[in-house]
Length: 346
Image 1 (spheres, helix red, strand yellow):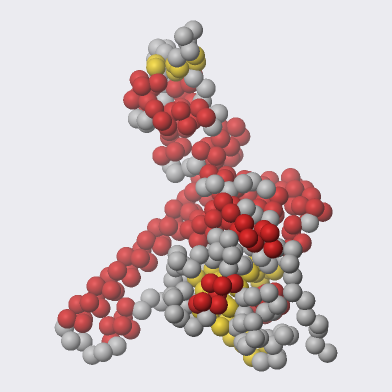
Image 2 (cartoon, rainbow, N blue to C red):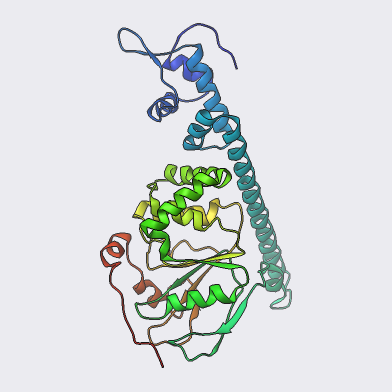
């Protein structure tokens, strides 16, 4: 895209680019384009600035975030190729989700039509029921349970494991990770200083991994997250070659904004749907008001009854217990050092 040698004021530049003056100011605030100042201090945009701004507008039209665009402008075609590959996969995932939603709406309309046509009870309901995955895993429950057989399934893209202190949820998570073929347990060792150093060394050694993590981190920061060693270590852990992930206390080391951005990414922004089962006691991670049909709550009761799946509806069995287990990130940060200890069974 080429422009004349004429220097344009902000209004003229915005009109030429097809964006708002506010957008131009945002590009400037992010350091993506620097207008030339007149002697009176007015912003003007010459050919170089317009060329740069035109590239930004073109990349924004592809859905890239400003943080991604900054990497692309700094690192060139290689970074652009990686960003576009992830963007394409993300768009294809969203398109697939839209097709599923359209199909659900179609089935619901059929159900309503069948109801009006006096179709036998249950027939339309069977038609309208969305398909579910059939992946499940069966294993013996560890202590503090009595070794009884337990079956978890269907295993959906997101599963939240929660319960009061001392309820056995960490042991349950480890048992699931052991029983589920190809699963990886992302433990709290990811937060140790030595492990964070190892993560940085791995990122420096694996350029493709570093690029993937940088793009995801940029999206999260755009959504309000704070870039931190804890967040990067978690993202690297979730990039492993595995069929599923079981994460110990997913919110550990993350502030409220980072937790909110992370769960939005895990819910809507992933390009693959490998199951993630995560321990949590944060209401920023497990927001009972916004859970979707592809998410599961697994509650470990305080009395060491077998874990139960809880429907996120007030009044459902276990709902109030789950709600009482959760706290705000601020409260969780104050109490994260508090643990409950019970002696091992002989």
